[in-house]
Length: 166
Image (tube, rainbow, N blue to C red; front, side, top):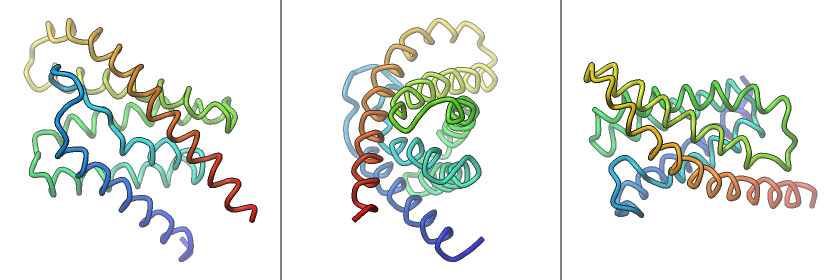
């Protein structure tokens, strides 16, 4: 790895971690357990398109582990890892077929798969398959929050592309 690449990844990890910790202090937008905006995923989605799958995965893993340590939510670590890894598994193939103007689509798919991953982890931990009934609620929230974070990532990508041309 070269210095520029490491520095870029470190900066994006720090930004994502800061957003994650700040969002953990904000009350949930709706009174449904497990639903949050996931603003740190703006960085993850953008990193998938900007840096590629391997670097985006390292940024995601660092953010999830450090975020759990900083916020003291160690139980959330397993849910975040399960959701985050499944999210990446969905976004990486989409990156190959979507254009830079369709980042928001990748984000919606990633959010949906993140919620599926979290439900799978919950079922595995609790050995309660009936938790799957909660999935439709999470999928609807995933589409809405994924659209929001995806549009933010899209806006960020377009602005940064213009800025880098200057």
